[in-house]
Every structure is written in C-alpha cells, then in structure tokens.
Image (cartoon, rainbow, N blue to C red):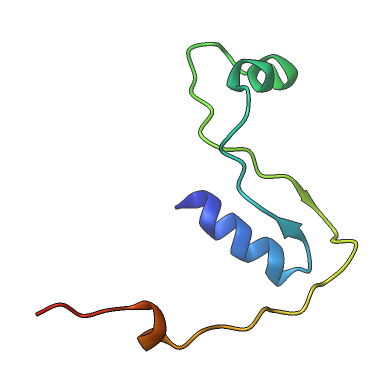
Length: 69
C-alpha cells in the first residue's frame, strides 16, 4: 500500500516511478546496505521521465468482463 501511494505522489509531482518486484534481492541488499534478515519486497526507481506517452485506448468494460449468473 505504501508503494502505491508513493507512486501516486511521485506522478503528482511530475516524477516517474514504477514497482519492480523481479530483482535479485541479495544484490539489492548488498548495494543498499540492507541487513540480510530484512525482506526486500519491491524497488521503486524515481526520476523525471524522458517522454510522456499518450494513454492508450481502452476497451469498454462489457468487452472484457462477463457476468455469470
């Protein structure tokens, strides 16, 4: 939840970020000096985006959701 709010706050200030969950956790711990007994759940890089892509088109909900009764 904290990473989600961090991401929203960053974009509010014009900063780009994303969650990275697939990384070598031991390498991250070593690089950042995190004790081995701690668990690294995610990494969130932060910076100004080089470009701002336009949002893609979205399909209608009824095209991708099916209600089964």
